[in-house]
Length: 251
Ligand code: PGA
Image (cartoon, rainbow, N blue to C red):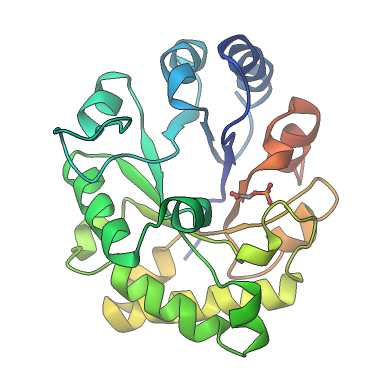
């Protein structure tokens, strides 16, 4: 089965409204004839403005998180209903920074994924092991556990709206990338987990992005691996000079 590559930029806590608009303006025309699927996830405050810039282009709009509740007394949180109204296409969930700095558990991530799918969003679900877990030989076991927990009670039909991003925590923002071979090994483990929980067909169709210090000079060899179907890019997605060569890695 031919899987279409999917490259996403996660802008995290960077960029003011005007910087976000400028970046989107630089990306949108350059990606209009590009061959793959693309997404940018600006901070919440820039979603509406970036949506306007992306209108009519093929670049999808992503949010970096959402509340596990549709509404309620949750100061500072943002609901799927609010994101929907802004025209957000997809929500990144379970990012390791949410787990590390905001105490998110696999169970909470599962609740958020179910809520996002219920409201018709695509989801980019992130998992990955810490350095200690990798050094203890636990990398594969950790991502299998995370994947099973995150996808609990999600139907195979809904799964088609989920992309998985494998992001080894030790490779995020550190300049250290997993070797293409090491990354591919875990991607294959994730794909097998999908086959075990769902079906071979679901596993074959699953888009599994790699994330963690993806740069213009390492993207090509990562994308050449059979189980790597795209990238979730942090630091290098903040400038068109580095994000475009990643998006257009084989052009
Ligand atoms: P990085 O971040 O590319 O800066 O390592 C990746 C991510 O956290 O999604």
